[in-house]
Image (cartoon, rainbow, N blue to C red; front, side, top):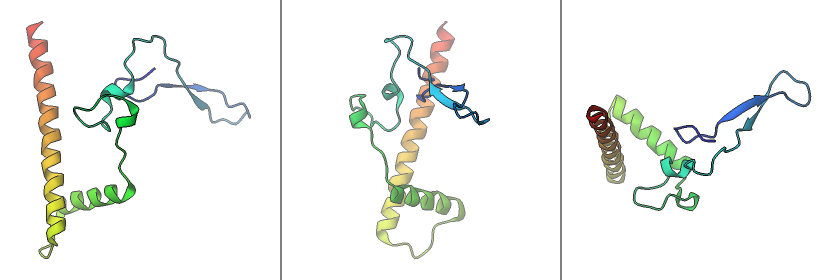
Length: 117
């Protein structure tokens, strides 16, 4: 079964070799009507069918670049930044704002729904 955040739920089981560290086994899905994690997976772009084939996994170089952006956002961008890096930083900023707005909209919608009950 999947937890609400889309992660596979696991349960501890004794380790067969007798070591003190238990192994974690996936909890079997109890009902076929349970939504798969694809429905809430952040790797699937908006508007795409929620299937594993549409999941986008970023490579290490991308995460390194994103870490650089976050560090510069905190400490300040270099004055002699190349135009391509300025463009990438602007893209990161725009996408972060979109995610923020989406999360805010979800919160507002949940609060509005809660207020109706």
